[in-house]
Length: 493
Image 1 (cartoon, rainbow, N blue to C red):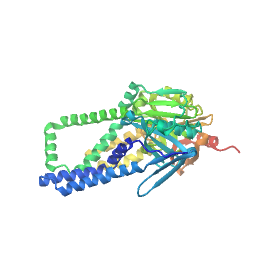
Image 2: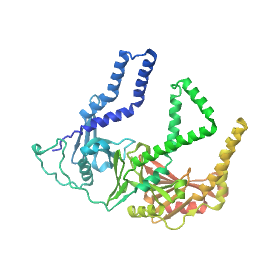
Image 3: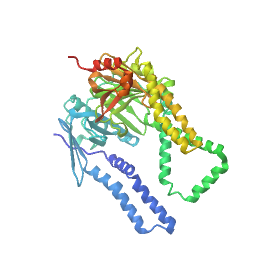
């Protein structure tokens, strides 16, 4: 009754691309060895050429071909079964009721074949999806969702000789239409890309790569480049540095636009769907009962423009190894508009209109003191060891005091209608956690000996995120405020 299905042949190309990306280091070493052999000997020895070809075949072609030839999946009545492997056979069975999210990813070269990649994630997913259908017809995603929701009707019987394509599957009833669809305009995406901090990450990666390959670069080339920079002068060096940062900024903008191209948030009765991407079109389904909380982030620059980003904290993996447990719901939006959308899409999460309750004024000196003491000692040490240039390090305590004031001003909370909001500034961005009372895993109150004298406390709530947990915390709240929060969370007798 339940027949095994193969992946689309385009899956073989996708597996080869994945293997190239995963084995980029040995591939680079192989080609670099060939380059060095040609440079030293004037030719490439035949044995080395054969060795490189065998290595590439073993690392790239063989695993991809074997996985594609042995991969089979079956949509059964109660769950999906996946089998693959040649030497070590893997047999995965996922009950439909255990599925956390169903995520679709469609590469640009998938579009002509009307196929997509489906990632099936459960609450036990750890970084990598439990089920990965790398290239299947798009109708399989609809069929899988209908089976999970228990909506599937009896499939229409189709004789094998009537199938035009061996990869066709029985037609499934189309999903219900979304209640509303929220899209990001091009100017919003461009503003998001311009205000992104991705350029800093690119600069760090560039420095790391330079450090790794510095020994490979000939010393004569480095020496000549250094002499040339010295001749140009400090002013020209600054211009070149700014130009490099602008280029990386441009690359970051393009990458952001590609990643969030035609971003759509679709609201359904029981779930949300997020769609984004140009070269790789991603579709992520989030069941409402799996949402553990909401995070509203305001970076300093975006805060001045009245812009925020909104994330959802979910139980289970988000399908993204970098952000397991949180999914970007709104990449960028005006703050008032974002709060309205949260209230519409997640009505059970009460968004406060009134002002938050802030930490007492007496806590400001404790914020300043703790930040100041952790920076003044390293600054003094650096000033002594690297005199006189070390005096530049004395800027750190001044910046720390500024950070302390901003952290104090950001600290606040509000609770009503079973929802609590914690707002703080852990680093640079102001972060607000909006959590339902029943989603809080635990609440911790801490007070040191010195804090007891000033009658202040640290309070923290634990929230399930991915397969572990995350935390929202407030520092130096007054005793009365802490007791108020603790009493609100504590179950009634």
